[in-house]
Image (cartoon, rainbow, N blue to C red):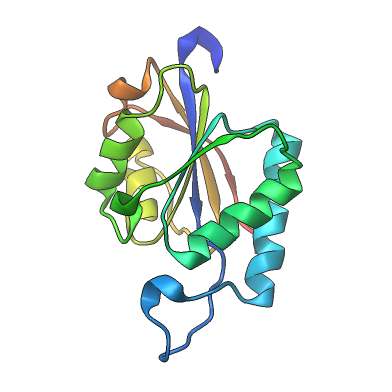
Length: 165
């Protein structure tokens, strides 16, 4: 939990996925670069001390594989709560915010693993910042109060990370 009882929402766009017209969009796997970038995102989270209490993840293959790489890099073995929520695929920024607002009150750090353009729009809606949101980018957003209080303009972009700098 952040100071003053606030929360931290970490929005992670899935890592680079294969372009394969033979596969349904939700079945596209990560590329080698995607796996490396997702692992680097997990290492960055660990170094920043942003260890999620709850993970909200799209059920698409590329988001599940992104979370797996992040989880391995975090070396979490204690059963972090993970919810694969179909509302996150493909999702809208408003829909993503609704899912975040339903998060368990005791979760101080929530990691949302999703897709663009909804993930980028959510970060922008909450903070008024964020020019671009490439694959495997992370935005850590400080939110006052509880999850139910999350609303457009209520957050502060505390940290941003991208594998390409």
